[in-house]
Image (tube, rainbow, N blue to C red; front, side, top):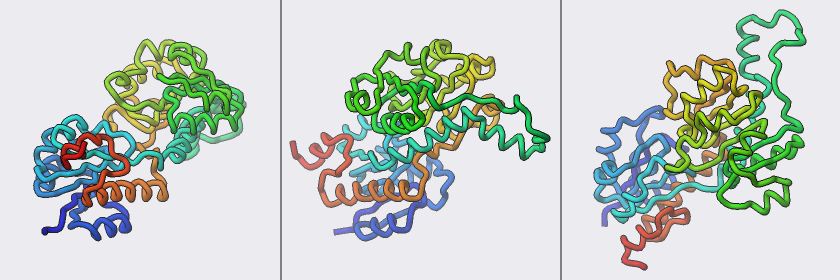
Length: 331
């Protein structure tokens, strides 16, 4: 019986590739920066599994390019880059890597909050440009974090982890979620409110929702108009959750104070995007999970999902188990 084939869309840790090679023939795209669409489609032609990233669009066209595909293993928690419905129709299992990046992403979220509030990146640029001549009582004045109100939009695992960090700063915590979160209320004194009230009362608004049709541009012109002029928006979820042109206008016109962003509507963000002209924006290149330990755990979890699928087992982190049932004849 021929050895199964796996395509990995970017270079990963040697440990991860080595474990995959124990079970399959592995093809790794060598460039960390980009995978051309035509190369993705070509390399899917005769593989049983693909280990992909958020930057890889696995739609119906890509799925049809791989007639042997059994599994699409996404090295991420979110999976808006994959057409799961189309995969299910083709009896292709889709998996993700939940849980392992919660605390790491919460760290980065709070780093963005702190940096935007205290103008850290702006201060660094100011010093490097030779602007620091003397101490001044009005130099780079920012916002206090301690004792302020944090509004968490989406109190899932990452939102809850951010709220736990906020308690260390004695922050009041509001949250908006489709479900009540009694554990957050009991442990952190968090109060569940509707989104409009959260926006009106929060000094910091931190977004932690999945990207879905109902969350696309969840924060737009109207929502930004509800925020305080001193408020700061933090987004380490997905770029399209925020209407980016509306955010630019709100920041440029001083209708909100600042933003800390780890994501953008288009990634990588174009260098001519007007958002990059603003001093009151801190933006990082989608590095919420970017620590050595966390990325290794993510890569190995994606590899484990593939290993299980190639053995004919339901992967531990399967998003569409009905596809597995169709492929195996199980119910």
